[in-house]
Image (cartoon, rainbow, N blue to C red; front, side, top):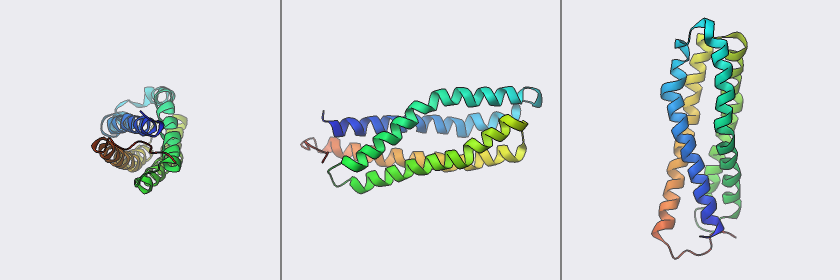
Length: 156
């Protein structure tokens, strides 16, 4: 297997890991924040933030680095789609930094707030949709590669 296809598979795998995680967080985990109770919420929120970081740091870093490498080095007609995928992952990081992290900081600092919780759940739909779009695009690119096994060199 050549380096380009390896990058594509690693990027797609990290993206689909994050898709599974973000859908679980969006549908199950975040909505349950309002069920923790005020006595335990600060402890819960801080533990959540710490433990979630342990789970997401490596796949998110893997995803953005391999997305950039693919966009820069890919030689085939899918280059535009790979730049779109890179732009999507950058948008996910911007949304994380501008919406999700500030919400978690507020929840960890002052305790549960219905408005902060509502904004966290609502704004997280942006990341959920962006990650899902990335996964679909990358899966189509992999399918195209599998359908054309004669492709030898996909990097410049």
